[in-house]
Image 1 (cartoon, helix red, strand yellow):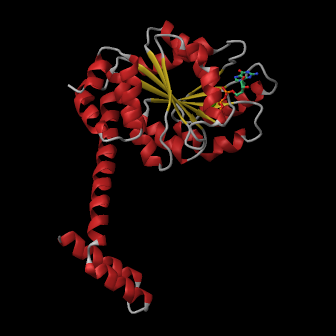
Image 2 (cartoon, helix red, strand yellow; image 1 turned 90 degrees about the horizontal axis):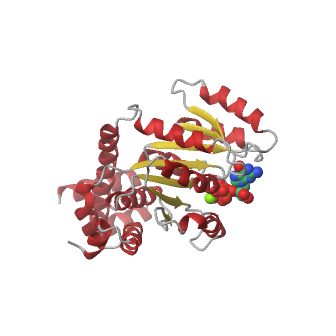
Image 3 (tube, helix red, strand yellow; image 1 turned 180 degrees about the vertical axis):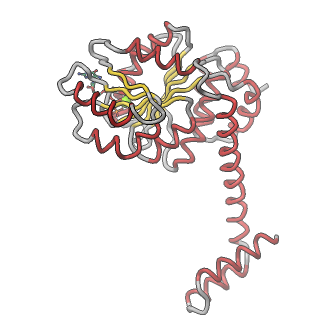
Length: 308
Ligand SMILES: Nc1nc2c(ncn2[C@@H]2O[C@H](COP(=O)(O)OP(=O)(O)OP(=O)(O)O)[C@@H](O)[C@H]2O)c(=O)[nH]1
Ligand SMILES: [Mg+2]
């Protein structure tokens, strides 16, 4: 057994931190680690927390941790923010805000380093969740800054998605329209201690709460603590309520993961083969002289490569 995997199973935090770095950076050892833990994964439940910048995602997660622990979960947190560098303010800020939790032996918190391609983030996240799962964490909260393709990708990796809004950002309704309406299982109007939160709550309830999926719409304040316990209970209820078919979801996730991985391997190989192909240079010259068109060149090259 890989020493890091052994450490993981024994609940050693250093091995856990190291294993997550390895899978996050897609280091060569990643393969071996995932191979050795894979059969033991599938127990952890995962909840994405997304929403516009500054909506209070980190603050809310900070409060959700003890509330979920009180319900019996062993909690870990992963933060995904591909827009800011690792040393960036947002993540440092998160670390500070979540500091009280970092000192708590029962919670593990980590910012993911993976950047760039959306597919890379999902791969990192899936594998980091597996590592936490193998280490015995049964609830993984995933923070990601909202609005865009990335949230949709992340919502496919997690079991439940919580979408946060707050009354003091002008772009709430646009964000609601911009695609967050489909991904949320629970909608939360945070900062309920501020003016305008009641109005926003009603708007969101009208826009989203009445749709066919009937997602829950709640109000919270991390300042006063109001609504936090209800949110934790709603998450717990949805996770355990039998509405989610975990086996089915996992199968779907594995299918898209497998497809991604095969396509990756094939792309890398074919890329090398293409570079070694004489016809590649020849067609490039012909294209430059307009003796061929790009479609014709691409189709002929692909046909040659697929025969090899
Ligand atoms: N009044 C009030 N302020 C809050 C509440 N929750 C969070 N805040 C404040 O809102 C600001 C942003 O909170 P964060 O928790 O960092 O928000 P975030 O969504 O994680 O932000 P990013 O990660 O940067 O997108 C901070 O100044 C918090 O203190 C709340 O319930 N009420
Ligand atoms: Mg944050």
